[in-house]
Image (cartoon, rainbow, N blue to C red):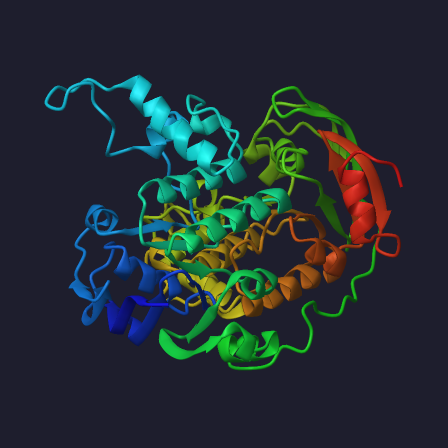
Length: 498
């Protein structure tokens, strides 16, 4: 296997923080190279240096034995490097085929600005058929689920015929069937001699598909080892600098009286029909189901983001929740699955993102108290161990996991009684996950109610007191912690009875 890519002593400094400190990485042709580390370890920054988004302050990059210095993503793509980002950035009003070939739309005549719709459709269909994706090229990208949009980004990267393809948390939005399809695509690319750089926090995936594993910590290179020469426990220890004895904290929350309920929740636009749920104080209620079952849509209805019918009660009182403002007024908080699109204000600071939902708390007459906002932000940074150079740093410069922690800190300032968590640990490393699990259990111990949507079966089984399973927009069944097994959940999710 010949050397395809070599990155040597890459250093990148941002104001107040050294994001990369002499990091090196070598990728061989026809292999999958896993890049692992905690959120904030520098993985995405290193890949952005490769992809032309950032310019390294020191070090060099060699591709096929030649020095390269990409000054833009276009140069990187033209040079044979493609990247699928964890956070989707798509033109939502355009079609699948427009998004697929954005920036390289085929023209009817070379020098005239007329798009060849027939050629555009043909090229898109060829790529989708090659990868076994049954998606209409003319469908608006906004009409697709998050998982299908993720698969379109993967297909787009493949369409460039790149030699190096970077996949940053590619399965974070995919169900099991779609993840299997992705692994098949990776095998296809491997057989063509491509080098795959695979960033993921899912250990089972890493040990299934990777050939070599590189670990980073705090912006530094730690080690590179063949997959067969390292264990899962070793990787965790190298990533976090300590051992983790358990994946899930010990549960000590106790259930109290009924805190929240929804009766006959229905929504034509969301495809939901007569869903009834109850939530007790101190309870963590999981919602499971296959992609398209209505998990996210259920939370969006409860939070007033979608029109719906049904009766919602908070602490026994009927609430007419038709907007997020009404939901917040009822002490309900919602953490969305898509933090980049629906969760953060990327150009604002960590402090501004933290306090933005609780500005009334910081009123001092006609002005806001800067000192009190800073104190609240610093308290959240400390409690949630948010890695940021300062509270004034722009949130878009933080890693995905640290952005998620800022969102959690924001909603905790609203003092919610009911928390709706949609994939709260998506794209978060094993160490940070444990901290968020402790936080969730701690909130339940305080008497708050948690509704948790997760695609990770272990997460549901490890945290939840009961698990409600949805199938095609209806409630298929509810299992207690003692009853729940992976097999029972999957049978209910498929519409079977248990």
